[in-house]
Length: 79
Image (cartoon, rainbow, N blue to C red; front, side, top):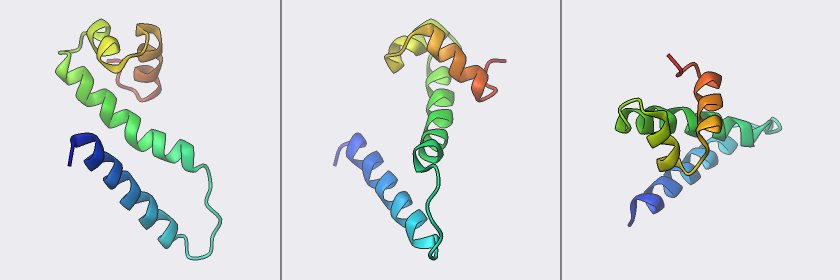
């Protein structure tokens, strides 16, 4: 199993657990919840691997440096 398959399986398990635990409640903002859970640790790890270099990190992520900077500010990782 590849790393991407491992990650996908982990996300599936977490989402299935989330829906099981709702106990009849309606799910809310699932997209936002998942993105917030995934984006911040991804940004932290990539920034660490890029040794804080936003240009390098943006290239690794496949996003613009501007978008990366906005995301870092959003999660309080811009320090």
